[in-house]
Length: 165
Image (tube, rainbow, N blue to C red; front, side, top):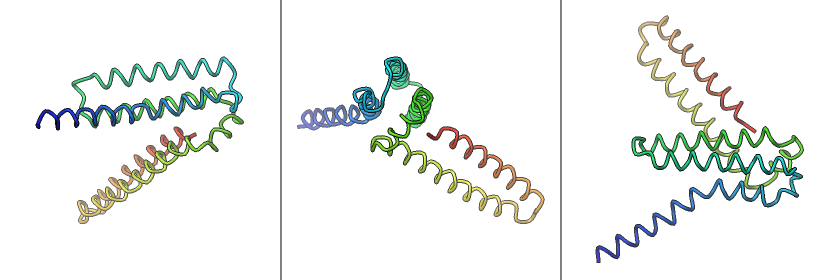
């Protein structure tokens, strides 16, 4: 009985993990398969395929790295994915990007960026409140720490906007 449950859980995990890992591949495959819809040249198509292969190798090496925690692996894979889309955007023309933006596959990436932006803002507000509590007796120190945190927030926000499409 235990073996059956274990086998079922293993099968479920394999199917679930494959579905997650193939999500970005499906988006890129859709772009490559419908290259005529987006007006991609053969050169653009080859560059996108090369970027996809490069990202896949990086994903695989991160997945095999036993020294990284699950959170670190997820963060690194997210960063690779964001860089992949940033590089693909650099390859595409503005008209191609406009067509791609209308595509529903692209909305998920935008939602991710918006979610990240909201999380940055929430973290900023939480940190500001924490600073107010810590330095309630010393206004100068409070102001100094609030300004440092504000600068970090602005820098993070700018970096996020630079990664936007």
